[in-house]
Image (cartoon, rainbow, N blue to C red; front, top):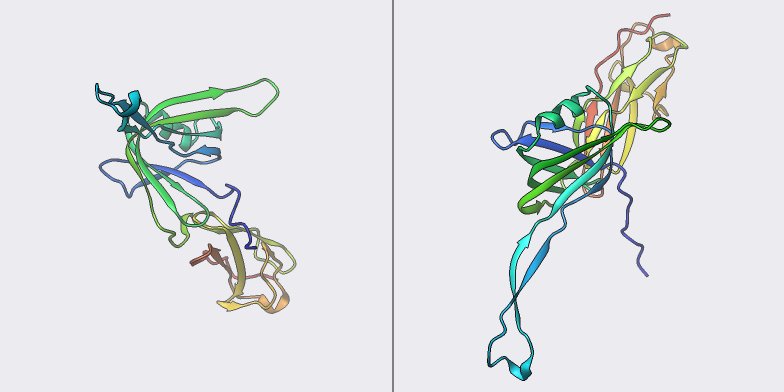
Length: 229
């Protein structure tokens, strides 16, 4: 019996772009519970006086591509908030990228942006797009970086450096390799690194490898300043 291919939705990204500039995408941050478009096809009654056995006959009608929606943490005044406000009633190209590298793209009209600010819980928003035309599902592609990985902390012996792996579309897992002066540090494959005496005078970087079942993509952070004693 083969193993299931099921997976959770963690890692999905939602982006949108203007029709005129489809490659200039706006990443919408802190999205959860994405509902992709779901189509329904009309049935047209084609019954006539000679329909066999006095039974109604139907033919397929037009297909309604439905709606796409998601929930998000609402952060007033954020880049995502302003982008969604500006998208009111406009046709956008929307991109849902799944962790396995498949991407669903469609034209949608931003219908609703409903915000909730409860007294004792986090603020959230529900966003709905009315889909226009047929969505297109692409084959799996290599992971794509949206926000570059960065290193935080002071490059000093004994002082931990911490990696933020950035934001990626189409990645199921990640690997990390810290480097000192562009040379791999054996065993330094976690989200932090503590510089040693031997590192003094050299910069530190980290290579992030984003992986899905078919592809992987490497991206190196900017270098820190030289490690100090």
